[in-house]
Length: 261
Image (cartoon, rainbow, N blue to C red; front, side, top):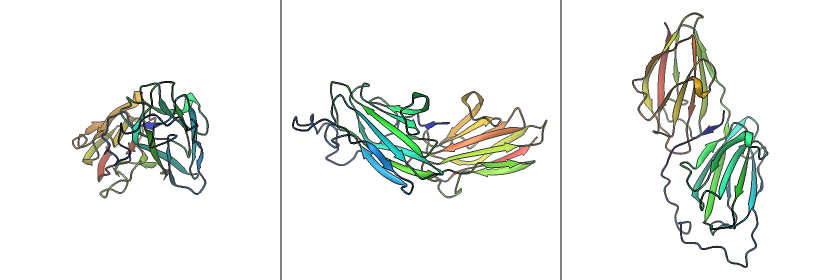
C-alpha cells in the first residue's frame, strides 16, 4: 500500500532568498538542463535534492529524473519545503522503485497539491520533474529520509492492548506501523480507544475489518483527538490497523484495548 497525505498543511516560510516572487526567469546565459541522477546508497540514510537552478527559477521544457536508493530493510519518507511550481502543467511525480511506472505512482505534486510530502513502501524511489513551455517559479527543495521497516505487531487470544510506537512518549516522524488482532473463530472482537493524541489530519490510525488493508474494509480513520471515545465491535473475529505519521509535530500517540466478545 502506498502511503500519502491528502490534506492541506501550512509550511513555515523559508528565509530569504527562497521567498516566492523574488526570482525572475533564469538569465539567458544559463543553459537549461537537469541536475538529476542517482542519490543515496546502501549506507546512506538521508539526503536532499532540488529543482534545476534552485533557488532561482527552474527552466522550461525539461524532464528531470531523480532516483533515491536507501539501505535494504528501509522505506523512504519525502518532504518538499519550499514547493513552488507554475500551473498544473509543471509537476513532480513520485514512484516506488527505480523506474517511471504509472502503476507504481505514489503521488503527483503540482501547484495545487494540498500536501508536499509522502512515503514509499520500499527502499527505492524515483522522482520525475516535468515543466512545459510557459511560466516558471523558484521550484522546490526536498529532503528524504530512510526509515527502518517495522515488523507487524500481531496479537491473538481473548484480550490485549495495542499502542503507537514509543507510547506514551512521542512517536517518530514518517512512522508506518501495521497491527493485526485475531480472536477465537466464530467469536467477535471489540476494540476501545482509551487514550488518543496525534497531529490532527496528518497522523492517522486507519482501522480495517479483517486482515486486508484496503479502502473497502476501512472502518475508521482516527486523527487528532477524535479517537478518544472510539468504541467498536467488529463483524468478525479479526481486525487490522495501520498507523502513519508525517514529517512534523510528533505527539504521544494512542492506546487501545481489545477483547473477545
